[in-house]
Amino acid sequence: MFKVSGKMFALWRLDRVPLAVSLKCEPDLAPLLRETHTAVLPGYHLNKRHWNTVMLDGSLTDEMVEDMIEDSYDLVVGGLSQARQEALGWYSIANRTPRDPDGRG
Image (cartoon, rainbow, N blue to C red; front, side):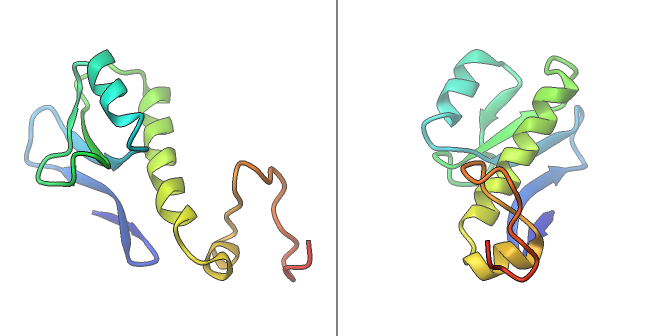
């Protein structure tokens, strides 16, 4: 399990072949990914509106899997307080430049 600030963004099923990872996803995007890719399933034992389980069977590109992991992380961090986001050095897509370390801009 991978967490940021105590909140889960990825859950790995290490006992499964092929390897599988559950990732948080935008509710509107989750079903579209499932319809488009057979390796993307509803979140296993998770809220299926917000989570997908991705089978790492080689059918998805590494870049796509990395993007889904990054999106999951961003969704979780985006829900944290601004102070916590700044402490993590995270910035939103809307603001493409990181904030100054002193938080003034």
